[in-house]
Image (cartoon, rainbow, N blue to C red):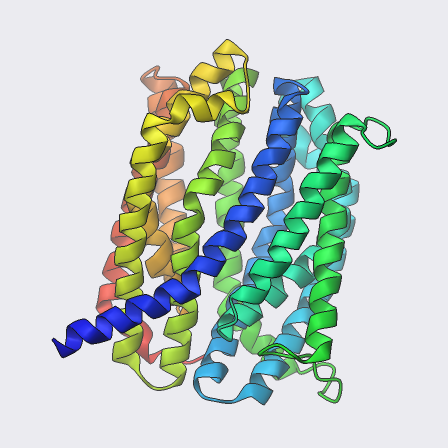
Amino acid sequence: MQVSRMNSRLRRKIYSFAWPIILTNLFATIMMTVNMIMVGQLGPAAVAGVGLGGQVVQISFAVMMAVSAGTIAIVARYTGAKKPDMANRALKQSLLLGIILSIPITVIGWFFGSYFLGLFGAEPDVLDFGSIYVKITFLGTTFQFIEFLSAAALRGSGDMKTPLAIGILNNAVNIFLGYVLIFGHLGFPEMGVMGAAIGNVVSFIIGGVVYILLLLRGNLRLKLVRNHVIFDGSIMRRIMKIGTPAAAEQVLIQTGFLVYTFIIVYFGTEALAAHQIGMRIQGLAFMPGIGFSMAATALVGQYLGARKPKTAERSAIESAKLSASVMTVIGIVLFFLAEPMARLFISDPDTLGYTVLWIRLLALSMPAIGLFFTLSGGLRGAGDTRWPLYASTFGIYAIRLPVAAFLGFYLGLGIMGAWIAFITEYYVRSVIIIWRFRSGKWKTMKV
């Protein structure tokens, strides 16, 4: 009975941590989805171009993940250990590190983004749209880093609501500017894909500036303290030591995604457009899993900081149960509502048929994704960032890519074979991460 009451309290705490994160990511995904719907009015080539451009931009996400993974683990530990001054120091060093790393990424994206796009071998009009989107979006990298890392640090401290509020503002600005600039409303010229990219950049700037102002005011759980040492090499090294495997995971994931996209491109523009639309819907479907994952990250880190490893373990297990249950329900909804969802994005018959197929296949992977996301989040909260890397690397390079090529080309299943590989990969990933979590070795890791 006592254990049941403790688990009940823990579930309530998990929900209190998870729901603001879910809503934050939901609004962000809705924003991207609405933008894709608007871009969809420009035709399949524009959808495919923006989708490919988004994948190139996502390369910078690897660096953000490196810094944020280290940040949230360290901030959560200091919060659990009741050391707010050290948590504030970690916040400051995280932001400085992010700003420094964002500068070369911006330069590389501006000058070489179009070259990376060209490697896909897509049709010329797809590459034209993608090049415009990539060059402009990379200009907002520094502010995107500030926004992303500030949110990660606040979540590590247990503040889930501030990122939600800023996320709502950010997304509202992005949707409004997308509507105005893509189609040329309120006296602005019709800018098409360029308008969507400008909307992204302006929203990044607003989000980054708002975070800095709030953190300087000192009314949140964390604050930017002016009298701290400007550069603290020891904290930066700790952040990167924890975060480097997370960065490697993202580099390998994004590289794998690019190779996977090469396979998708082979099956034509309609299949590629369907894939990009499905990825937007996937983003919406992933939100609960990501929310429970971040809740597990923060709670595991805080309980380990408070020297309560058993409670840390229970928090991750309960988070995983809730995540898998919710994701299964989402999978059922996706399967039966695939066609009306697809029609929101595209009317072209061939693209529509591919999109419906892709959504229904995605639906089958939801339970495994819920387990993988959440237990990986728990491991990251403990500072065990290597095993999510190992599971993701094995899943993509030993399962997704070979199976996609075998089913798609050798067995002649085409695009369906490539998508079946995606489902198989996530079930393999979940098995690996469950095995690692059950070993318990993450409980003794130092950060």
